[in-house]
Length: 125
Length: 125
Image: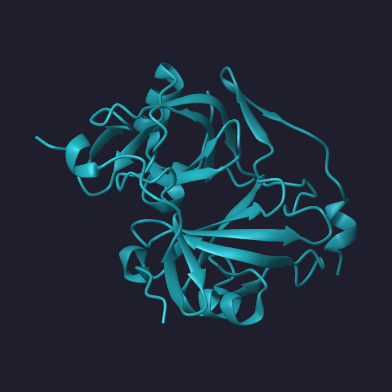
């Protein structure tokens, strides 16, 4: 049994998803104990959606799932690091490879790179 | 003026520190607006210590400061990614290079790698 400090912040720990091959940081989302256990069991990155208040199997809608190659935990056991293979290339709902595509330049945020897919096509009903 | 969504979670946003050269994720800590502004102004990673409830210039005690090479923000503007040069090699207070030195193996957490310094010598009074 892996004991993480879920109680520290309302039962939700930040989980960083990092490309297992390139080291690029793709996104950060949150896990409760259920999401963490689901990730361990299925090998697919599973978070807790704070907006929808439900378990969120990343990529279930878009097909862009994250296959987990390794899970690391920090010294305080209150942050999770997933080394993943990002299926479908883009981790971000905007179509960008990484959610971290906004770069601080002086007093502005500048978009870096281009989207790899059109979100309107992927998420259409 | 760079507008981040500090209000989303009690004024504190998670900030990931990543080695600017190797891509290794070194640690995650939290920034309030003051810490973010201090980081921008000084070029040294500055967090908000949730335990001490004070501004925390990383490495001020140990000398292991983090020189910020780039700051990225995610699509929701509620997570910060710092690309840093870690002075003194180790980012973690345990002496390990990275705080993420605990690896999930089966149902256990296994320590990966060895400390680069002795915490008792660095943090002695």
